[in-house]
Image (cartoon, rainbow, N blue to C red; front, side):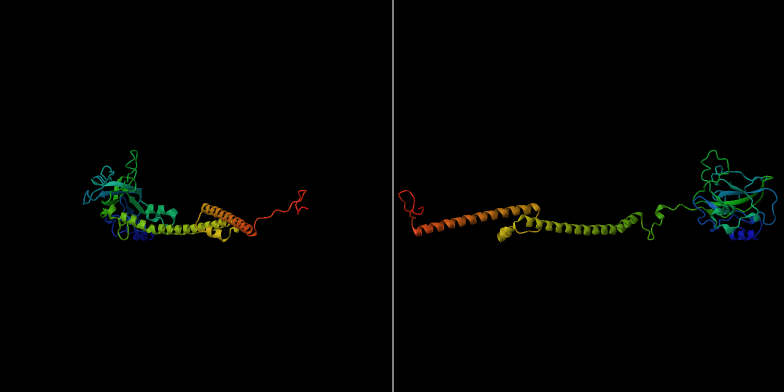
Length: 333
């Protein structure tokens, strides 16, 4: 009963004898992307050939593949004596000239199937999938290896319809014991052209995506530049304040405090002047002050001489003191 429930969940068991059954695509539970461009995952014929009675002996199941273009009728996979065909992928041009044997595996009894409850266990997932599924086109290297001796199962062609058939072979006699019907045509996926790929929800081209990305990042660079300009403006203001303070101190040190209002008027402190300009102005102011002082002294000396001349003119010529016989003046005696 447990094995019967498993097969019903996979969808591969149908009413009737084995000859009335067809291979089925794997359930989406096990293969979400199926078929692909070069592979097709099928459910194995579990409890199909031994559903009515247990088989005694050694049996294997062969999987044959036929391209839809080869024939639309019922193509045989055995010769007149009941021996299964052994044609390969290369001999049949990938199934276009006839069916080829793609896979062979032992017939697993219904009572020995692994439980699907452990499918979530990563360590057992591969074993469970191999027990329930067979992948057509899964061997990518057998055609390229000249020394390959096994059964070659190369990739299928894209956008091509294939039919599949399971054959039960009695290994003791080498004859076909039973077989399924050919499956319905199953088409592999088609390679989507680049121009048809929906690269954006609004179906924008690659160039439009590049332009959108550039425009999207432009505000960030503008914001960075604006922040940098603000920082540089604050730095420049700080440097200007330092220069003004330094110039004022140099001006105060260069101009003597005894020069008075005239000198301060001649060399006022002006914002924005360099140190050399301030020093030149200070030297010019000092020279002017010294010249003014010299002129004032000469003017005072001139006025003193003028006053002395006026006094001599007013008092008359100076008289010499009387002299005695010994040569002494009156003042000396």
